Length: 245
Picture 1 (cartoon, rainbow, N blue to C red):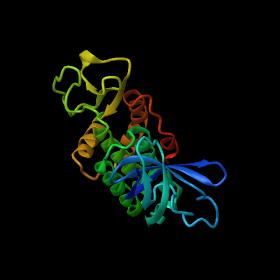
Picture 2: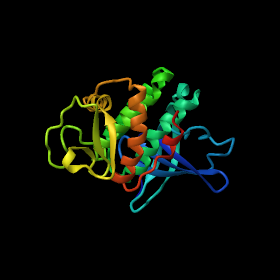
Picture 3: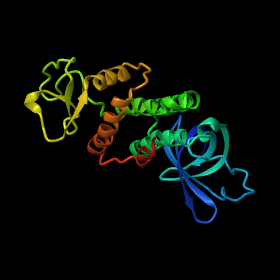
Picture 4: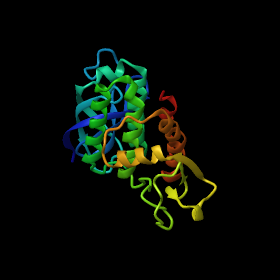
């Protein structure tokens, strides 16, 4: 028997299906990540035309049936299109980074209101900040999202032996494989050197402090984050991250 479900949802990804339909990946506030088929939505006269744009916040209605991997969309209305984000390519690419992360890492149909709220907060902040702060915001939220995925980088002490690290050195050895800072005894061939500024920035990010990351730390994170995601999240590659300027 079908249940009629009404829920808020953020559009993570859309894929054309046949001539006029879309398969859409959504992060909902009630059911976690789901996929819906929006039949005929690409027709100009469709009542749903324009409601499933990437990273828009919608209210959707669909019919939930048991043993279904994908559901059929019944109705949708836009709650927030984040129009200012769409006005600048740098903001569009930024929004897609977090949407792609959640689309590729969240399991299907596991209730996750925390990730939903997290992504809504990110989009609202992205909508409001100055363009110069966009990259800092993306890296800050992407690093925080790693905590929810269970793979937060270890920066408190040596990740292997827990030897205290002197946090005023010029540089630190960050092991991609080990997932954090290592001491001299546990140096390996995946070590990336990061500055004391970057370590301090990471600590502030995980203390939930808003911070504008300086250019040097941004460059180090651009080197570290893709390698870290690939190793710790099943060879994850965020294609949208490559287009972030």
